[in-house]
Length: 345
Image (tube, rainbow, N blue to C red; front, side, top):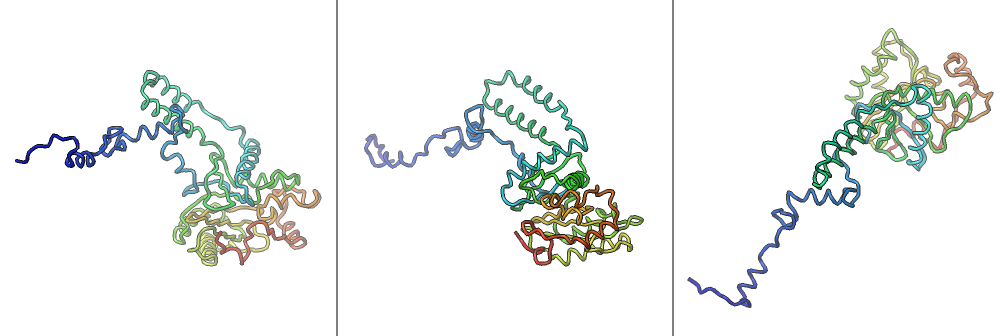
């Protein structure tokens, strides 16, 4: 048995001291807090404890364009923040005209106040205080599920406003018709405003299957009408414009063979907007009359140019107008021309 060394300067003592692991700071096995590291990190983010506001998990997950959404797709030239603010103002104004003021219930507030009373006694416990704060943020997030909510579109110069309890096509048509009649400009950065009535995966099989049901209200027998299809893809390269248009036109013809293509002044325009792996679909009226739903263009011209309400203008009159005053291209916006439809931003 080796003789034990009692010298403090013995090499074996120095080597042993160098190999000894540092004591854990927060009770974790690795000196970084381990399983107990959640609280100090979250506490540093809590305004109750002097840090920034903590964001509950999943709050931002739904703030992006996704399947099953309806809303309004809006294009702009740079300055997306101003575009969002302008969209909220415009949609809020006309939304109140059509649907009345937003109604808010006190349900979430009651839940929040109830939680405050239950956890009043636990204020001294920092972890309970943090939990309370996160619950309050969740409650506030639920309250923010309002009539209009901006979500990430997935493309530059494009914003998407998700709608709840609103018919996007009816609302946008009402806005355009009012601006068309009054010639009063109410926007500075918004270019086009397209209602989106449904979204699906941006793959041909999914789009075809989804559109078979989606198109029924407009094109299934006995319903019929003339139509055109406009297609735009952003940040997507696996879809082909011609293939998409042909497939969707085939779906419309299958629903009723009397549906006919009209590229000059159709009764309905099928809008196909693809962003990444999401396909946004809509069927709109007065696409030519309202200058491709361009708010900048629809107010141009004198008040005597086209003063009638779009709903009172006969189809024959619209055709004559289209012949006498062909629509100008809007170079500042993404036109649906042959050369641009396959462009990937």
